[in-house]
Image 1 (cartoon, rainbow, N blue to C red):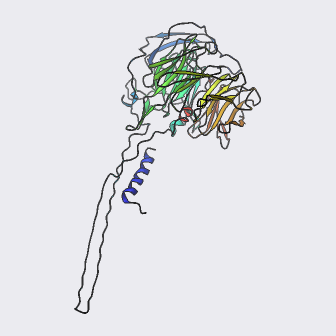
Image 2 (cartoon, rainbow, N blue to C red):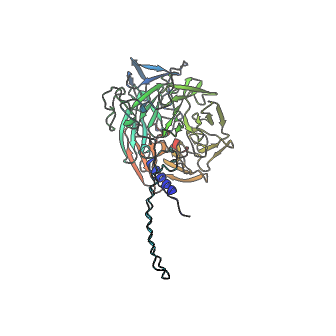
Image 3 (tube, one colour):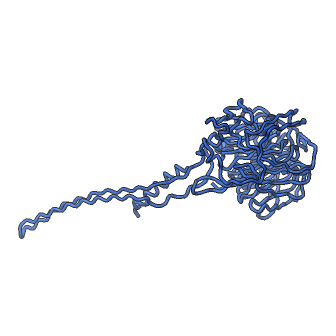
Length: 525
């Protein structure tokens, strides 16, 4: 059947439109405790949001394992519980504009049909003479219309935004931005006004569109949000120029860095109580504006030595909107909820270090549900795969890789993985599970690959230089990245197994969703 002009035009416009719209020991040794123990002091939660650039601070510290003293001066704060905004303020605050996400697209289907029909006929009847009939008919038809409505703008990540890695420099109090495509460190930012290792940054999380990162500072009890691109930074001094780090050597003072958007203090300065579980939630997609809205951030911390809490923050303001207390904490000492991951339904999962627990917080109702493994689980890192199964890298106990299926509420341990030490763990979105294995057990130092469909070991990958693997994640092109505590990161092609090393100075206690693949992997694209 021939295709009509309108159908053909719609197909063409649709094609053009599709193109356009196109958890821990802080040291390298295998220890059951983190490297800094702080005095546990019961007290009320100190919750405040600091607008970056309005705080000055000084501190002295002997490093993440030593003592620290901090004095804050003339700090302008906004108390939590203020007004809530569900849209990104950088979209309207001048003079910067938000053009990193796909804008609203309109399409006009113009169909012009021009035809000329000329017929000449000669009829000769010799019986009665000659009759010549000449008929000329010219028909010109021009039809212009808008065609069918264009398909709706669809969400989706990808592109250069997801070719970034965010690695916490724990002993410097900063975070590095790494360009995965060029394998270069392109910027560094302080993660707390103290501007030193006294803040002890660790967990990171990347937003679903890749435009932002949040970093949790364990020892100062704060969380900081940073913009990945200058278009989303804020010209705070109004000089028409974004003051921001341009390379790894340019670490601007906290108050001058205009890509730092806000810092929120969620608990007091206490290493064990400090925020660890850190995750961006799944935002809502606005089909009219072609942008994500109502973006939230989940942070887990302690407010007393026996009271664990998960807070939901407004991503645009940093204000705490709601909290959910987690009963029966602490699961180990007074350490805060250790890791966080989002499931396909948008709920947040967490656990306690060296525990058997899988804890789910309903994103809407804040209901807390807990399941404990029947095995000798000792959780460290965690992730969620596309099927909603929650995976755990275990440190002690059986020392293997385990998972919990919330559909049938069943626990399992992957055969052959026991007797080891694991830290970070990640799902690749294609059925594979990858875990950082330390220098102990049968495998040794490297990354263990699990076939998540066959539920069996696939291969253990070794690297030329390997000290203490912590984080594992995937960039926008599907390359594996593993972060080593001792000052470097490795990139590996999962197919060819080609490996490349990038030296990143300082110590890196990073093993959460430092690339954004954890969140984007559970959201249909």
